[in-house]
Image (cartoon, rainbow, N blue to C red; front, side):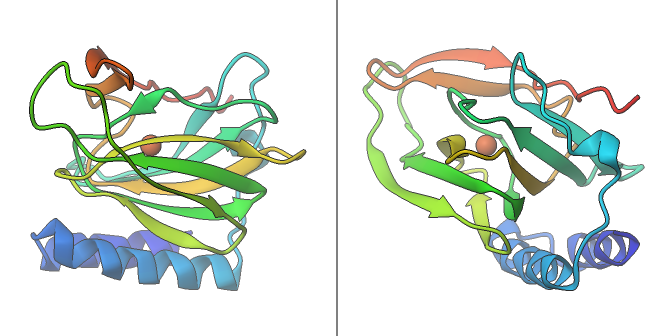
Length: 180
Ligand SMILES: [Fe+2]
């Protein structure tokens, strides 16, 4: 994990443009997953009530954070945005992602923009600030654990959830899961 942290910190410092840095972060995460990450058990357990994100690392200056995101079987998210860049890689299980075009005007139905099932070891740039709207859920009969890297402290960022049929927005904060 320290290797990944150091590499992402270097990339974030060197490349302010998120369209440039995200492919580099994706490459670093792909290599880290291929090498194998040793996640603490407390950051891989599903919460029966809802999907959960555990902090693996939060930069002191909050320029980026790394989360272990755990979706139990049958769990998923509403349609949501991130308001920053994001790179997601699958540690175990499978994640179904449905993407949407980020609306530029309020209260219009969202336009679907593709779907994909992500498998262990696969990495995607899920988000740049201008293109960050999707809905994800656990696919299959095992929980999905993802390593999520975001351009800020994702446990405190105010971001949007969307009602896709109407474009109605609600603001929310994810809050970090409890690692005790
Ligand atoms: Fe997301």
